[in-house]
Amino acid sequence: CALPISKDAASGSLISLYGKQQKLKQAEKVFATVANSSETRGMLHSSMIDAYSKCDKHEEAYMFYKEETQQGNNFGPVAISMLVNALANRGKMWKVKLE
View 1 (cartoon, one colour):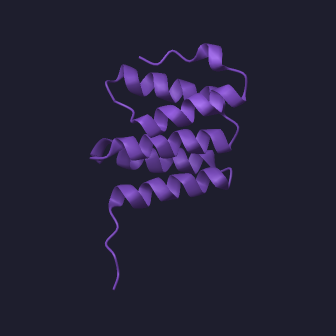
View 2: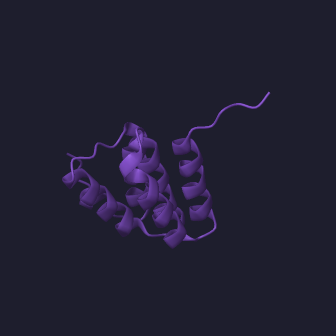
């Protein structure tokens, strides 16, 4: 019995996999391809923050957050927690101003 997998779940998994493999450009391409058509952007945002963090691109994760929120996209608590954790682990906690 095969369980159906949503496009968003598959895309989020692929983004996370690319992050683990240090292939940030590929992760960004997947996000760009599905982000505008996604109904569960929160999962994709979490995956992108995770990918940036795994590639030691914590500032980019923060910039991604800022750009997406300025465009009116809401981040779920998981994505925000991941961002705060990534910045805190890099000594950048002072920069976090979550609105």
